[in-house]
Image (cartoon, rainbow, N blue to C red; front, side, top):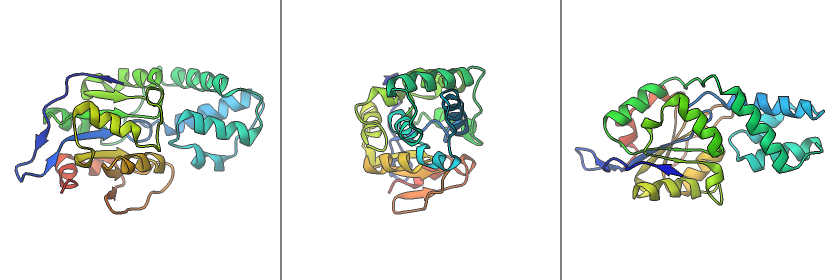
Length: 230
């Protein structure tokens, strides 16, 4: 986990507190979910295996150990998990080396959160080396704290990443808003007790108690996030 001194926790004029906002990375903040699948297809092709498109929904949003492990088992590839993790991260880092595209509405939302000094964290199942490369494109100044999948003992769908982010800001998870694009990430955020905004990328996500589903970050602003806390 990396952090800077967070901004002061904020409270709306009506008295309902939004203490922090946490954003997932791949597929939520940056348009890279497709990059990951392309990389997985390429790496397994090099290993002599063809991936079934149907497996994409199984591995999306998952931690590297789960996604890579599933594909190893499905294909029977002769490679260890550690070796495959290196191959995937190396290929992905090379893929994003020229920059990554932001999701629609992401730049505007990040600027608004920064302008209003809302404590904001990036919470991803991706490894630190990948997060740091993405931050080179997105801008580290937008985040008071970042949590990587290889920096926690249990990553998404376990709540630890979001509990770690809340603890880093000294915030109550129940007064934090999380923006996620996959069922895995949503499960982690809800298990942590956070309010969730789902912006589905590859697979649909249904609305539920304490969860709002939107089509794009263009529908999300600070007023909307504050309205989730009651």
